[in-house]
Length: 110
Image (cartoon, rainbow, N blue to C red; front, top):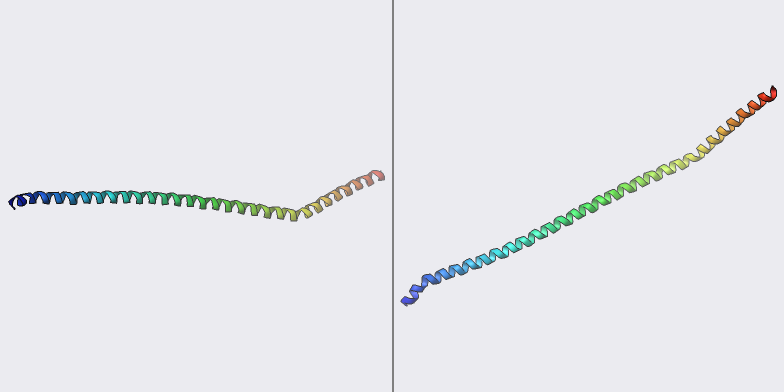
């Protein structure tokens, strides 16, 4: 019994060492968990950055579409004005012909 009593402090130290090792193992597991969580967070950040780029591209696409629509509106307005321009050109040509006729009449009168 005396022998076992002498071993008791050593057994207590061994038990403390065992608890310490188990705690160290748990700390390492927690560190790995934290590292994995950090990787997940970084992946989510990349995902969010990619989504933001996609949104910006879509905004540019919409801005380009809006410009195209405005150009088409201008084209339509120009097409609507085209008959008026043709009429004005005909009026100008008619006035030039009238002026030439007057000049010819003056020439004939002389």
